[in-house]
Image 1: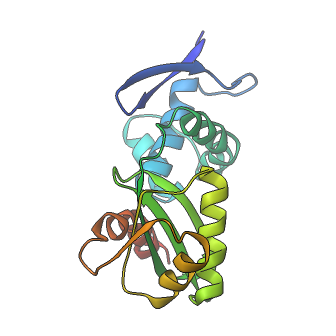
Image 2: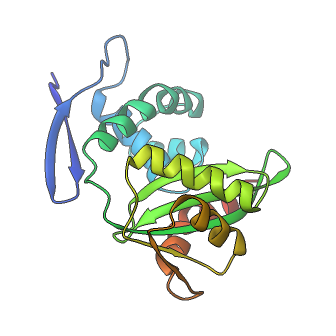
Length: 194
């Protein structure tokens, strides 16, 4: 019987308490592998089903969806608790996405190591939206950074002057590659969706 879940976090392997798999037909290793495949790679439930079938495991895409709904948040919360503390250089950026047929902005903040600090979906990209995102970010992190790096969007400057005047603000098209690269998995998943 499995007593713990082994996860890879930053500098090493950490043992964590396993979620309850009682009442499930498949072993915990298969369930966790399916959930990991779905969330780690831009795959659909049917593609995960096919990958498992190639390994000789017959499981339906609906079952995989239910596993992802039940166990995905538990795995994510466990990994989030083990996440290292955010560094003092934050990169902020936004990307335009189509969500449920409507165009939205996905605001994202990452630290200098590429760890996602916070995300927020909003319909606008103005100063009010930037202030809302920065306030949410500071509230979640419970501190301000030493340096904030953004692209040349003017609403970032307005929000910076209103909320974080003491923080050094660097605006450059090229310095913000850390935040731009963090959008790549989202873009990959968006391309695979119908």
